[in-house]
Amino acid sequence: MSYDTNNIFAKILRGEIPSFKIYEDDYTLAFMDIMPQAEGHALVIPKFEATTLLDIPADQLTHTMTTVQKVIAAQKSELGAEGVVLMQLNGEGAGQTVPHLHFHLIPAHLSQLKRHGAEQGDMKKIEAIAEKIRAAL
Image 1: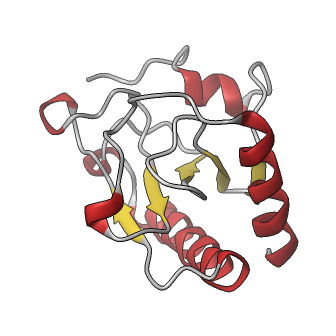
Image 2: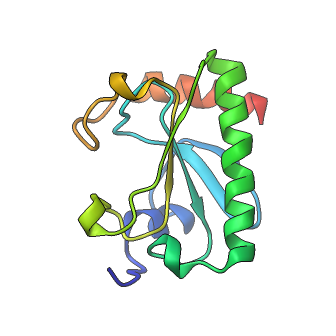
């Protein structure tokens, strides 16, 4: 996949599509997945235009993973998550559907996950969970 500046995450970064943002800095954005595999499912994306893990410079990846750590800590403290599944689908062959590097942070046991992209979640519930996580960040 080549980088598509009109992918949904690029549009979210530009503010063209709304999202339930939970954290943002100069390098990254974290927001709730509206098709959650479990309650509290969040995404972390770099602001760098990278399609896969192989497309991002190490310094940008370091910033992204720092945000991943922050969000996981907030999920654990605010949602009482005993564990968080960290998932990164790297390329279409792995099931990546949005051509922008992103990390899934899913506060649940692997055996409890719904199928990826199966159904849209309850927006009011997602927003309430976003407020809890955002408060911890």
